[in-house]
Amino acid sequence: MKWSLRIARFAGIDVFVHWTFVLLITWILLTNLGAGRSLDESLWSIWFVLSLFVCVVLHEFGHALTGRRYGVKTKNIVLLPIGGVANMEKMPEKPIQELWVALAGPAVNVVIAAIIGTILYAQGKMQLPADPSGAINTGNFMFNLFVVNLWLVIFNMIPAFPMDGGRVLRALLAMRYDKVKATNIAAKLGQVLGIGFIGLGLFYNVWLVFIGIFIFLGAGNEASYESTQALLSRYRVADVLMRQFTTLHVWDRLDKAVALLLNGQEKEFLVEDDNRIVGVLTREDIIRGLQQSNTDITVGRIAKTELVQLSLDMSLKDAFEQMAKAGIAISPVYENEELVGVVNQENIMELLMVQEAMAASR
Image (cartoon, rainbow, N blue to C red; front, top):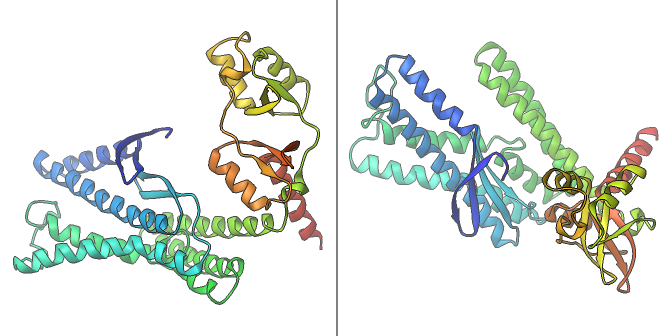
């Protein structure tokens, strides 16, 4: 994954850490040293943050493994300075399944807090040791980790997208309303809460402003995504089929692809071999080929060989999801095993823009 380093793989899911995570560790170290704390105390703070992010990873695996139970795959988990993200292909369609997936992450933190709390209680240390400096050390490390896991549960259960609580709320609403209406209700509540956080942050803590902005934008994006999915489900591939398209042969030289790119409107091309579509070539592939080699290279050497074959009667929502999952911009369309046209993501987006414009004029 770009700008990220893979640090682990568990249950077939890669865990990446984004390079900006290094900035967080550096900032913690410099802040502690700048506050007059010793190197040993500063390293304890770093160890605490790393332990916290282990809990975050376990939280994300809670979502991922529960989603797998319902047939939803997780591409990877990425650690960012602001937390972790489980890149799931989609959320389950059934509300009860989405509910369990959303609850699984916070449930992991509840279990972690329960284990730590039990250990502290058994040792008679179920209270924060006095430390005027506020530094992390051997005496307060576990208690702080216990408290932070509880805060993770509370924070993630805020009933607003993109928090887990927002998905829990949407799942509960979807048991009574359709998914679009449920999403819109949850998103509007999330945006109200986001504005509230921003208002509080202006008077009390600037971090609340960033949290509020994060929630406000996340809620809007979720509502927009669900509306788009609902709109796509009303159309078939046949509604956006392009019957005029250009194909390249695997043995064509790259300069032919460059000429087609410059002399026409097409940005993606099907690649054939023995009258079979065997790959696709995009503008990005052409540019990358020019950077790595020259125009003498053949199209077959740089074309993507992963294909999604669509049919005319397929739902446009399913087609779009399959293309996005495969990371391809154009797909061949078949009818009775005969190639009849192509569909690309740009044309799908144009359909959405046309429908939104028509809806706005009514």
